[in-house]
Length: 211
Image 1: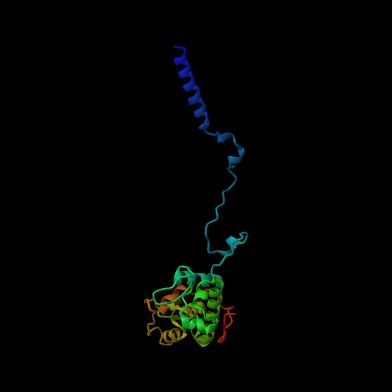
Image 2: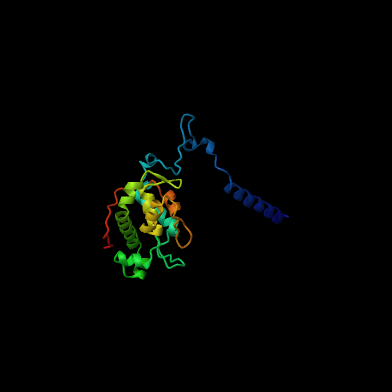
């Protein structure tokens, strides 16, 4: 009989001990969890306003050139440096072999495995296209063609897609000569999607190379 009662008492003690382990903490008496009625809680959401990032360590890319390059990289390849598409275009910005050779890059393998080289190649190509299209930029910037307001960055993005010649034909025809890449993406869509970025500080250079 004693052993039976000892057994039940042991169970009671064990259950009581376990239950105390799950006892909730009384936060009502903890001052560090309290917010005064006069205090406000601040939340930082993604914003297009550069002023919202003045005290942040993360740079605001917005409409700056780095935002321009990243936006094109996402559009072209989802930002994948090692991507090769079905037409043979390579890297984050989808370069063809002939364009790479023009920029002084002679190894496709090295190009695909070197993100820094790809970033330099993109900047060099923008410089070349800006040189080829300086007159077009001056003549059409600010105008509306085929329902799209033309900007320098839009022109440079469209040139990356279809080449400077295609952009020239499209704009000089007032949008009547429709130009598309091998997948059907139009010059017009790039003129619209990449409008308004800051590319003014990119210096036009017809002989730009990657060093």
